[in-house]
Amino acid sequence: MTTSPPNRTFDVASTDNGERVDRFVQMRCPELSRSRGAALIREGCVMVNGVKVKPSSAVHHGDSVEVIVPPPIAIGLVAQDIPIQIVYQDEHMLVIDKPAGLTVHPAPGHPDGTLVNALMALVSDLSGIGGEMRPGIVHRLDKDTSGLMMVAKDDAAHRCLSKQLKERRVRKTYLALVVGSLKQDSGTIDGPIGRHLKHRKRMAIIEGGRASQTNYSVVHRFDGFTLVEAQPVTGRTHQIRVHLTSLGHPLVGDAVYGKASPLVGRHFLHATRLGFYVPPDEQEWRECEAALPADLQAALDAI
Image (tube, rainbow, N blue to C red; front, side, top):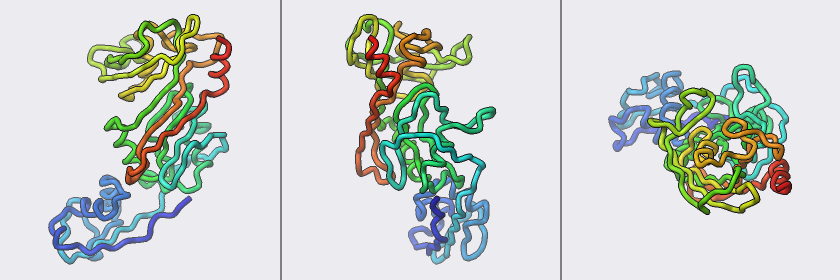
């Protein structure tokens, strides 16, 4: 694990006269979010002329601002040797190929055996997120969905990738095998998604739901099935599953929105390609790919 950067001292220039100290710290320490900087100020880790201040305090020309970033604190996450394939890695982030059946986060009643536990053992140079020694999960995949996920090692990468997702600059492509034959070779499904009004563990297209769009195109037509490439524009829970079901074509093996299948023991959905601008400077566009896992490939071979 990496240690935090050494204490830093900044002299306030005339151009920064009157600036809030939390804003000044963010400008001088761009790897820290404003909320993280404000937390450090409240904890007494930022001093102006040797005196502790409030986040709203102003700095003045000639002041000396010292910023102390303590090492990330351990939060009781257990590092576990769970096989995970790394598709891309640099000092700020990594892209992994998540296997099906693996939950992303620990939760009550499920404290370990998750992707986060695997990453704690797999990644040796975490800088921590929000002052905690943990990987930064930028987006999620359902437990039974396999494929590519981005993970941040530090705050700057986490903010950068989260911003790209919010601005819809990340390109995510999934392979889905659906029941039946789609009428059109390509199209866009546009339907607001929210919690199902009767079945609270399911999502549905409902009035007042969150705006959701999925682009799709047919890759191959089989007898009774269609292999589809889906690119979600938005990132709602179960979005691809709900949208394809709304066309009358649920995913093969999706027991929640369709029915179980003898072809495969889970829903057939795999995050196969992922494109993003490499943080933190976003000067490089990178695309990663992950082949179909064995169980999904076997299902295709069977039909």
